[in-house]
Image 1 (cartoon, rainbow, N blue to C red):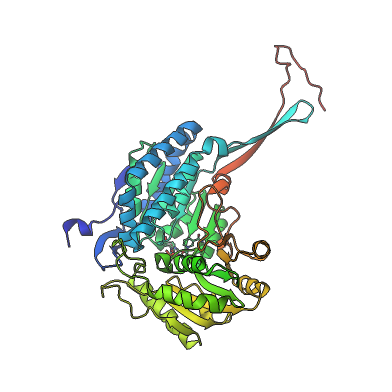
Image 2: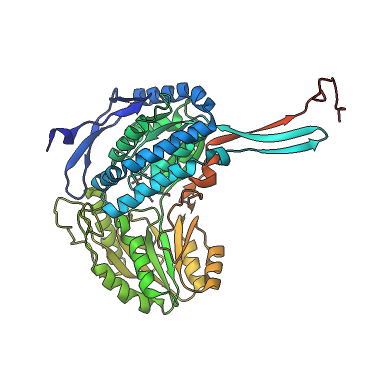
Length: 500
Ligand code: NAD
C-alpha cells in the first residue's frame, strides 16, 4: 500500500481544506473490485458541522448580493473546469463505487449537465408581475434564496447526485453544505478541488465528511434552512420527519423497486438491451434500476430465452477494464446481502434461470455478484416487493396490461417504471394509470434529465418539490409577493391616485 493510499480526507470549510476537528473515528474507503484501501474518511463531529454552518451563514449576505448573471458566470467556469477533470472524476467513481468506466463517464457527463442547467438561472429565477391588480396598484412575486442549504447523498452516484443540488442552490444565491456518502467520499474531493479554483466567497460551498452523526446534526441544526436527501427509504423517512419537525424545507428521495412491463408486441432484441442495461448496469445499484419485469401474455415466451442468453454473456469484472460490462457491487457487505436475497427468492419458490452467486469477477477479494434472473416470481413474494439493490432481476407474469399495471401499482415504491411496446394506446393508458414519478417508454432507465424535475412517488419520495429542473428553483428560493403603488404622478406632482 502506498503512502498516499491511506491519506485521511479533509473537510472543506470556509474556502479551505480543513482536517476534522474531533472525529469520532475514521472508515476505510475501498475499491470494491480489488479490496484495496484508497483512503480513510473521518467521521466528523458536531464541531465540524458547526464550523461549516457558521461559514455558510457568514457567506450568505455577500453571495446573495452577487448579481445573478455573475453567479451564472461562476457556473460557466465550473462547467469548463469539470470538463477538464472529466476523466479524473470518472476514474474516481469507478475506483470507489465500482461501476464500469463507461458508466462512470456517463455519470460525470450528467453531473456536468446539472451545472449547465443551473447556468440558466437569470431566466429561471425570474418572478412574475401583474400590473393593475387594483387601480394603480401592481403586484409582483420575486424569488430570494432560502439560506443555508444542506444535502445528504448516497453511495451509488458519487459524482452526479450531489450535483442535483449544489449548482442550483448556489445559483439561486444560497450557501451550501454537502455530506457525501462515507462509502464514496473521494469523487467529491475532486469536485471541491474544482470548486476551490472558482474563488467563491469563503463559505459558499462546504463539505463535511461523516456518517449518521453529521446527518442528525444537519437535521436539527438551527443554522440550516433546507435539507435535500437522497438514499434508502427508511433513512428518507427519518430525514423528512426530523428536518420538518425542526422547521426546515425538506425533500427526501428514497428507495425503489422499479418495474418494466413488456407487452406482447415489444421489439424483443431492443427490449432485451434496455432491460439488461436497466437491471444490470451499475450492478443493479441505480435508483432507476429495473428490478422486476412484468411480461404480458405471450411476451414471456418471446422475451425470456433471449434475455437469459444475453445475460449469460455479460462480462463481470473490475469496472476500470474497458471491456467489462458489469462491475462489482459497492462492498462485500452489500455482496453478501444481495446473495442472501437470491437465496431467499429461490427458497420462496422462484426458478433461478441465471445464477450469479458463484461469480467472482476474477478477484476473490472483490465484491462481486453476477447478473441473476429469477423466473416464476409472484407479486406476493418478498423478492418482488423489497429493494435488493444489486444485479438481480425478477420476472412476474400478467395476462393483460391492466393486470400488469395493478401489479406495479401495488408496490409501496413508485420511483420509476418502463413499458416496452409499439402500441401507442397502451403507452398512453400506462402513462395515465401508473403510480410512479418517472416513466420510460422503450427506455430501460428513465434517467434524470437536468432541465426536468426528477423524483419518485409514494415511499420513494417524501416532499413536494422534486430534484433539479424547474423544481430546483422552487426548492432553493422563497417567494415574496410585493404589492405597490405610488402617490405622485411621476412628474414631480403630489398625490395622484384616489384611495380605492
Ligand atoms: P443510505 O440511506 O444508507 O445512505 C444515504 C445517506 O444517509 C448517506 O450519506 C449516509 O451517511 C446517511 N445515513 C445512512 N444511514 C443513516 C441513518 N440511520 N441515520 C442518518 N443518516 C444515515 O443509502 P445508500 O445505501 O448510500 O444508497 C442506496 C439507496 O439510495 C437505495 O435505497 C437507492 O434506491 C437510494 N437512492 C435513491 C435515489 C432516488 O432518486 N430516489 C437515488 C439514488 C439512490
